[in-house]
Amino acid sequence: MLRQDINDMLTQTGPGTPMGELYRQYWMPACLAEELPEDGCPPIRLKLLSERLVAFRDSYGNYGLIDEFCAHRGASLWFGRNEEGGLRCPYHGWKYDTTGQCTDVPSEADNSSFAENVKLTAYPLVKIGDVLWTYMGDPATQPPLPEWEFALVPAQQTYTSKRWQQCNWLQAFEGGIDSSHVTFLHSGGLKTDPLFKGAKGNEYNANDKKPFFEVADSPGGLFVGARRNAEEGNYYWRITPWVMPSFTMVPPRGDHPIHGHFWIPIDDENCWAYSFDYHPMRALTPEERQAMIDGHGVHSENIPGTYRPVANMDNDYLMDREAQKRGEFYSGIKGIAIQDSSLQESMGPIVDRTKERLVPADSGIIKARQKLYRAAKALRDNGVTPPGVDPAHHHVRSAAVVLPQEEAFLEAAAEDVKVRPGVGVSSV
Image 1 (tube, rainbow, N blue to C red):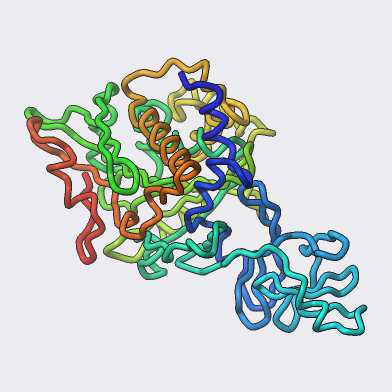
Image 2: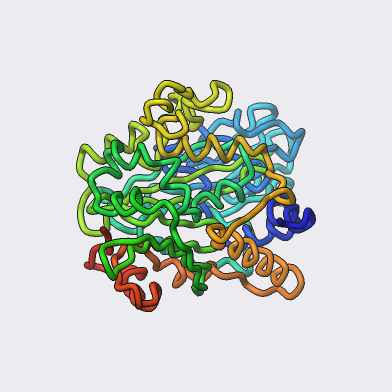
């Protein structure tokens, strides 16, 4: 069980909260690059860490992330006109550039002098891969740009999506480091999903429903090892890296692309689930990319024009009890991503962790909570930079390996969990 005050600390990410300040130490996904597809396109609304913002791409191609509301009368700049290097409020014509600086106040005789003294809160917005990244902390301590492998491989080798998840970021993230549920919740998907099926590792998953967990510290977070029985004298290990605060990678299966996630708080009761697939050695096939677009694997089929899944809380995730009875979908819910989000959202907006009864299979979740708590407290009390900020901590991979029973998983797989340019992932 988790004390209520610690649960509050870990789940609250607004300005001035310990976990909110922790998140603000990192570059994190703000939106997908596809949401601002061309110079001068319409702005988009964003809410991140409980702050209401607008993102835009000005007529010169510069990206900006600024306070949603005009400094004059508080009108939303989502209605703004994207023109000549800035966003102009349609109410009275005040104009802002991508740094939040007001550049024009038409009603004032001494226009430029008045405008110089008006500046909205603004955060950097940088395109790396399919994602536009932001840093919402103190500019004086802004870290180097992120170096995640999925965002740095050539465009034909990677694909990223996102979906709105109606629950706190922490309970969504905790699902990402919980390998034990895969044998049950995703058992149907392992057999039929085009981005999972056919791997030898699926047999190990199906044949051993009681994985043993070992958790090891890493410079950026943890490595969670899930051990299952393999052929005589061997274990099948699925090794999941977690890099603070919320980056995880699903251990690979066969030659399928590698999956992973970020969970980014919108506010305390909603989050964005960013899901990526990439292959470090080859382009994604047209069939793989189309499967991702169609919502297979870790991705979701979304309502057109939105990032809300078609199967969602309001329609009971399109549950099919007959498919559940047939064993086609263990929970009656179609799709790996929606199987996860349906149960995580079912806990309520913020789960009451004082009522939990955790078991040894939850050791990764327990240690992640402890590490988050210690890091947020050290930042608050002593200004200590948390793990995962350093780009060197981003150079990790997940791995699926068969090892002799006497070998320690992380020692034996030390090279397998590192990014090694020109070398494929370790997969079964």
